[in-house]
Image (cartoon, rainbow, N blue to C red; front, side, top):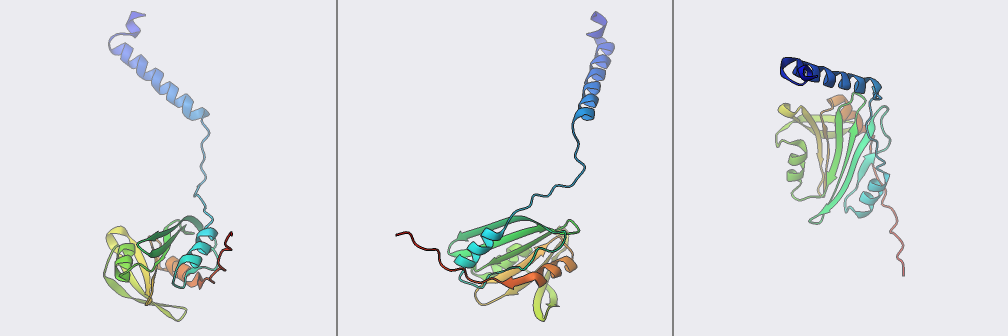
Length: 182
């Protein structure tokens, strides 16, 4: 037994035992080869944003085929209401709708686009959106600035997918105020 615990043979034997254990573990462990993207229900954030935001909130009228809504966050900071809604697109890129009444609007837009340099414009259903592109991050952005808020559609998705998301955006009705308990 001494020859298996000393010198080169001991090292080789220990290595063989470890590799065999890893091989057995990999063989018996269930492996999933299917993609799993967590899906979120953004309906509550959509209603709450429409209820609390002093501006006209827009949201997708429908989720595009093979797109997965995977993040939604509503924040209220320094008096500004901001909603971010993220998607994994059909081509498995990232797209995000962000809107806020943060002041100044340019700061919010520049932060979401990761650039302050406009790159042109795009007509989407008769509405002009400003284009921005940050090459080192492969990030494309569509921007609309209103007097009281800004809407940004951004991500690593191509212009075609970002345009498709922008086409689904529709104004959201203000929900009726919550009844008071009293």
